[in-house]
Image 1 (cartoon, rainbow, N blue to C red):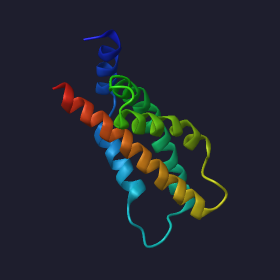
Image 2 (cartoon, helix red, strand yellow; image 1 turned 90 degrees about the horizontal axis):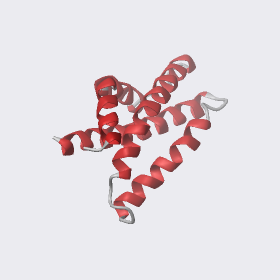
Image 3 (cartoon, helix red, strand yellow; image 1 turned 90 degrees about the vertical axis):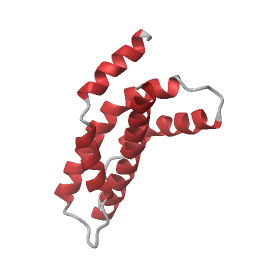
Image 4 (cartoon, rainbow, N blue to C red; image 1 turned 180 degrees about the vertical axis):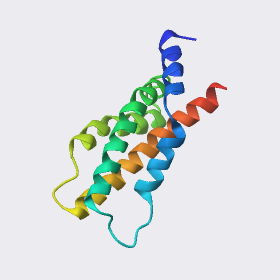
Amino acid sequence: MGEAVKRVSARQDEVDLEAIGATVARALAKRTALPPYEELCGLHASLVEHINALMPLVEVVVDRMNRGTVAWYQKRSRLNMVPHELRQGLGSGLQSADWHVRSLGYTCQFLLNNVVLAQEHDR
């Protein structure tokens, strides 16, 4: 096993996948009314923290894939967009904040799914 893979395995143990899943579920929950802005700010902060924790893990997963394949290109493209999405911020209104939190929820779900798949593959 390569040194980079060992480091990632150690970092995976530090990431609480259940807590991340719970945050994603809250971000993607169906709502009949928009939540308070403060709640969206808290979700945003949690999602950003989780995304920053998962990104290096998924980077290694994608780097281990066969370059040039459709799957590699799709995942690489999605990863390349994450820093731009993080820089957008919540926006000025409640609707834009809700939309951005939901978007970050989907991004976090993508990252989480890839970490879980990599763990299952490595077993």
